[in-house]
Structure formats: C-alpha cells, structure tokens
Amino acid sequence: MKAETKNKRLPIVRALAMAIGMSGAMIAHAADDPGRDVIDKKCASCHLEAGKLTRIPEIRKSPEGWDMTVVRMGVWHKVDLTPDERRAVVKYLADRQGLAPSESAAFRFLMERRPNMQDTPPSEEFAQMCGRCHSFGRVALQRRDEGEWLKLMHTHLGQFPSAEYSALGRDRNWWEIARDQLPSKLAGLYPKNTDAWRDWARTKHRPADGRWVVAGERPGWGAYTGTMTAVPKGKDKYEVRYELRFGAGNTVRGHGDAVIYTGYEWRGSARLGNEDTRSVFAMSEDGSRIAGRWFLKNAEEIGASFEAVRADKAAKNAVVSVSPKMLRAGETATVTVAGAGLDPKVDLGPGVEVVEWLGKSADALKLRVKVAADAPQGVHKVAVGGRDSGQALAVYRQIDSVRVEPAFGIARLGGGTNPPVSAQFDAVAFLNGPDGKPGTEDDIRLGSVPATWSAEPFDERAKHDEDLKYAGHLEPHGQFLPAFAGPNPNRRGLNNVGNLSVVASVADGDRQLNAKGQLVVTVQRWNPTALR
Image (cartoon, rainbow, N blue to C red; front, side, top):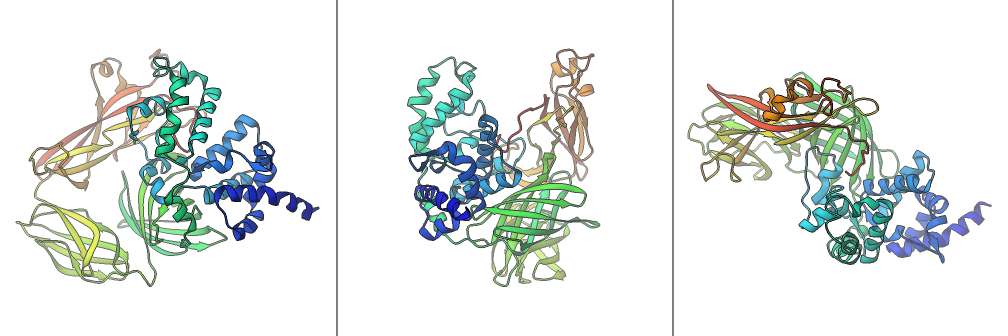
C-alpha cells in the first residue's frame, strides 16, 4: 500500500519539479518531504490538471506570503491542515519557490513588522490600484508571470468585488485597468523567472550553526550587545541561546528555536527574560552576518533591531557595533567595540585619542578615549585592525536639534479579543548639515538621547474633544499606552480615539531642546495578517 501511494505521488512530484527547475536528485528528495506530502494529499485534488499542478508552481513568495496563501485556502476552500502540516508546506514552498535576498531586500521592514512604516509604490497608479487596500510591499514580495498576475486580478474581483466601487475605484474603469494594464506592468517589475533567483537556487547556503556576536537597540531601553549560539536540531532547524547586555546590571538571557527558509530567511521564537518574542532575520549571502528585528509575541510594535557577526576562526575584525554612537568634543568617554576576531588596534578618527585600554578580547574592545576640543564635528569612520569597520560614531560640541521618531505614530485602542496596540517613541539628536539649518535632509544623525516625555492635544479640535484625557497615557520611557476601545458614554461617536502631540524634552548642558511628533490613537484592527 505504501509503495502504491508513493508511485502515485511521483508524477505529481515530477510535475512540480519540472515547473520550478529541480534536478533529478532533488526530485527523489522531494518525494519524501513532509511538505510534499501535504501538497499531494491536500492540494493536488484541486490543483492537478492533466497530470500537472496548476497555480502553485507559477508563483514565488516570502515565507509569510506562502503562509498567508495556505491560510487563505483554509478560509476560502475549507482546506483543513494541522499546525505541523501548515509549517511543512510553507517550508517546502518557501525553499523551492521563494525570493532571492536581493528580491526581498527593499521590503524587509514589512516582514519584520516594523511599526509606523510606509512603503512607496513605484507609481501613483500602483498606489491607487493596489496600495489603497494593503501595503504595496505585499505585492512586491511575490513573483509571477503576466498570465498569473492576470489570474490574481480575477481573484481580487471575485473575492473583493467592492474594490471596483470603493474610493479610487469608482472614479475610473477599474476592472479594465486591472485586467488590461496592470498584469504586464507587474510582470515587468516582478517577473517569476529572474537571474537572481536562478543563481540563488543553485547556491549551496551556509548553515546558521555556531556562535554569533550580536548587537542592536530597543527603543525605550537602549542599545545592547551580547552573544547568540545556534545548535542544529534537524534540517534548517536550530536551538538558540541568547545573552543580551543592555547595560550595567541589565543582562537578558533566553533560549528558543529557529528555522531557516530559502537558505537565508531566519524565523525564530524565544523566551528572552520574562518576555516571549519572535524574530525575523536575514542571513547575508555569504552566511557571515545576520540582520533583522525581534519583537514581542503579543505586541509586534515593541521590539529591537538586531545585527550579528559569526564568531568562528575565520572571523577577522568583523565589527557589529561601536557604542556610544556620539562623543562630545573636549570630554573623555568609554567606547566599546563589539565583534568577532578583533585586533586591539582602533582608530576613531582625527581628534579622538585612545588614552587607556580597559579590556581586550576577540569579541570586545573596551577603551577610554579623549576627544579634543577642536576635534572635527560630524561622522567619524571607525577602523579596527587597520581597516574600515563599516561602523561610525559622531563628534559634536552641542546638539543642534532633536527629532521625535516616528514623526507620525499610530496606536490602537484595545478591548475584547484585541489587546491595545501601543506606540513607542524615541528622541534622536542631530547636528546641522552643511546648509547650517536644522530639520533638513543634510542633517547629521547623532543617535538616541534620554528625554522627558509629555503629551498634549495636537490641534484645537483635539483640545475641544479632550483627547488627552481619554485616549491613554504616555510612560516615562516614551511608550504610549492607549485606552480601551469603549463604549464610552461620555464621548458618543468618538469613544476613546484621539489626536495628540508627543513632546520630547532633551537636556544638553544648560540648554533645553524640544521636539514633537504626532500620534493618532485610532480604532482596533480586526484582520491582522503577517504582511499588512
């Protein structure tokens, strides 16, 4: 019986393999893959025509994109998968029909769930036809030929007919544009067959196992350095341990698991301290570095940037961070360089002198520096071991301006099955650029600075409606915690929404600098997806 089932499965395997360019050896391996089993048993009954799979082999997507497709099959067509089957089929498809690193690079912020980000469609037409309902990155993180893009247009019309009659749809011949113009344009921008994917699919990818030196910054907490160790637990699966040092007396330890998709896409879960987290990282093409973001499992808006360098015998002056990022002229400071295979030879640029070594190891160099009063202001490249480290720090005499980041933030009310979505703000110091004016594109970023936080009504309407009273409150570390959704009988038609200004006050010697950002506290979101 088992032999008969396998013999029936092989033609289906070959059909998919031929469509995606797999070799004979890969075909034999695919036949025994649990993800392949799911396609045979749960997908082929609808997608098999004349011995060939349809639709599935004609698309390439990110892991999140494939997961959303699998979920959609359950919602639309009642395809019932266990959690293990869902994971297996997503892994199988993302590995064989994923995106090359260069194809996903521009929209990594979307996969990393970075809050308060806006993508930029390549044209106003795409913004109106696609970006009015979802991010354009959701489009750009997939690849199809013209015929398959056309089928997607038909799917949109069939499943979401209101798209034709809603705003920016009813003022034009929406269906004619979607059917006759967009497929060829999308196929030109995001074709299924590319040299980048062919080259990546043929490449043998370096595994993620081993010890890594890591660094990053969590808004509201500050910068951290530390280590990560990944131990293989099966094909592309790892057990991971973390030790993150945010500062004196604040070390966070944790452990978890990770899976590598498509040869470079790291997706992990971990318990860091007392917080459950998720991670979305990307390995560099040579496997020597990792970059991305980790965030709280139940609050994706709260997280931290993440960078790592592989700490093996081959590492030579691979620097992952230099902290602090800003040094005041005329003062002394302690600087830490974190990385792998570090030589105790550091050059921080003109006017910055190393006066004492406080610690030397292959992972970290700790030194006391003296910054001359006449040291050049601006960005100083950092050299380690006689070569550019790719890192920099800034020298300043005084802060010229401060900005609140994000400049425009969104928080969402909570209640019932939907918890509140907070907003985390950061105060960032800048130097004026060559034009001598603050707030222009040539300003020089110094880095995050401590601030005293407050909130106020954004405009007269917000003041009249008492938004500050009802919308929520701002924590001392810059995190806004929104109120519950309601109902609020004192604000009929508004409940607890609000439009606020978030104010950061920064002390720079005897000077006080202020900056404002806008915060909209809005209603709950009921359809969270991996790619918004």
